[in-house]
Length: 161
Image 1 (cartoon, one colour):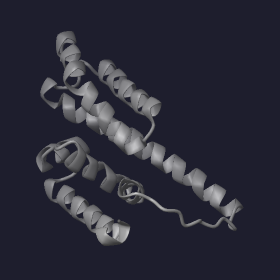
Image 2 (cartoon, rainbow, N blue to C red; image 1 turned 45 degrees about the vertical axis):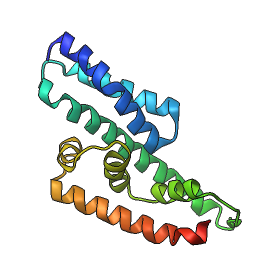
Image 3 (cartoon, rainbow, N blue to C red; image 1 turned 90 degrees about the horizontal axis):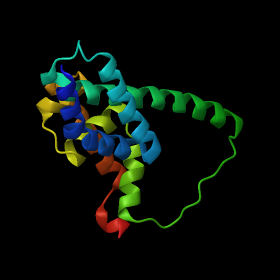
Image 4 (cartoon, helix red, strand yellow; image 1 turned 135 degrees about the vertical axis):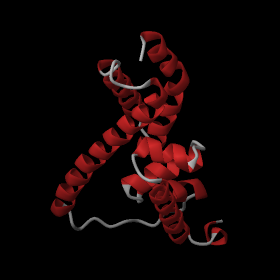
């Protein structure tokens, strides 16, 4: 990969990477950091990464960073949950988008990732497989399971409205 190809990859993929990270993280600054880190890792490996696979490399780097962060967060939450066991949830009114976002946040990291790439970003199953390192069949299964969970979690739309 040349420097001009690297610069072109920034023009072509930085915005998509940011939107993808933002959708999964709900934190603008953290999403920017993940994208910047992905491009930094690409720069370090500029001679090793094939220009035809740069999109997959960048998305895989962001996905891995999200998974690592999710694992750290889960460990912290488990620790906090063991401290405060008397916490109760209060029922409050919500809108449909909040319910969907809550359901998406309850998906496993890999389900959330492939669902976001497919339904929010519009990538094909094959592109998602390349980006995630999964087979196309695995991608389809994860998306099916994620949608099935969301359908059960959200329930009937009439109940929400």
